[in-house]
Amino acid sequence: MYYKLPYDVMYTNRYNIRDMPKEYFNISKEVLAKEVNMKRRELTKRYPQSIGFKVLEKAHFQVKNGLIVDGNILL
Image (cartoon, rainbow, N blue to C red; front, top):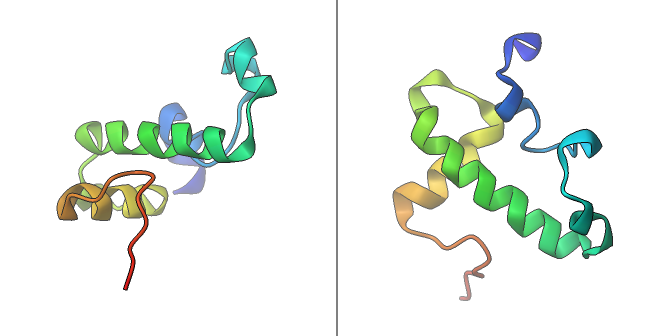
C-alpha cells in the first residue's frame, strides 16, 4: 500500500526539493508546515476518507469539524 500512494499524497508529509518553489528554501519550518497542512486539506477533496490514506486523516478531521489549519484549541 505504501508504494501505491499517488504522487501528491506521497509528498504531503515529505518535502520534494525538486518541486518546491525557490522562495520556500528561505522560510521557517512553521510556515512550511502550514503550507503542507493547507495542501493536505486540498487533497481531501480529491481523496475521500474512505480510501484510508493515513497521512490525510488529520486533514479529514479538520475539514469535518470546521477547524482552521493554524488554529489552536484552548481549554
